[in-house]
Amino acid sequence: MAALTQLKTLRSKESIVSGITNRADLMAAHEAGATYAGFIFVLTSPYGIAIEDAKEIAKDSPLKHIGIFQNSDLADILYVVNEIKLDAILLNGWETQAFITKLREQLPKSIKIIKIAHWKDDAPKMNYQDVDFYLLGGHVGEILEPNWSLLKNMDLSNVFLSGNWKDSGLLPNIQQQPLGFELNFKMSTAKMHLSH
Image 1 (cartoon, rainbow, N blue to C red):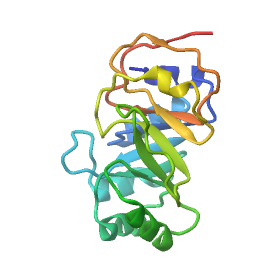
Image 2 (cartoon, rainbow, N blue to C red; image 1 turned 90 degrees about the vertical axis):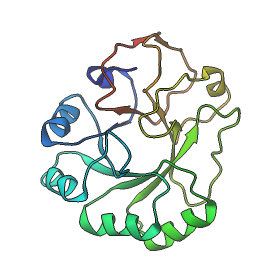
Image 3 (tube, rainbow, N blue to C red; image 1 turned 60 degrees about the vertical axis):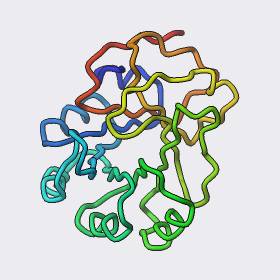
Image 4 (cartoon, one colour; image 1 turned 90 degrees about the horizontal axis):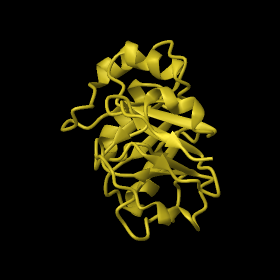
């Protein structure tokens, strides 16, 4: 797994640190160079956060905010959007195109939609309409064994890569840099060595 301290070395435009559960986490993510603080609104996740806690942490935050949801009801997502200033929604479940279209219709245009694309799939689905960006990763809190060969012919200009992979070894020298990386705050403790 990539370490939080390595965010600045990953040579990307954007970075998400998810699993923020307190103000100290948020400030550590900011100091490490994160662009976004990710609040996980998944009740079953050990990295999850209550809406009221996220609302308090987000006050006067130096970072943009992402609400992370997994198979949530549309009404639940819209409730959170009304309670917390979010810059993006990350759909980390099996949300359908119809669901995404309804969400886009009801979200303010300024809020981006990010959709999970699973690294375990031979051909991750990355052709949804009304999606601004993709996260090539796994489910909330999942430690990954990435198939790096998938990146060879993939356009990564609108893709965040999850840094929550099993081995703390080498990030391969990929031809195109992704839009950014995503790390889970609580999981990002191991070192990652970059190839040049």
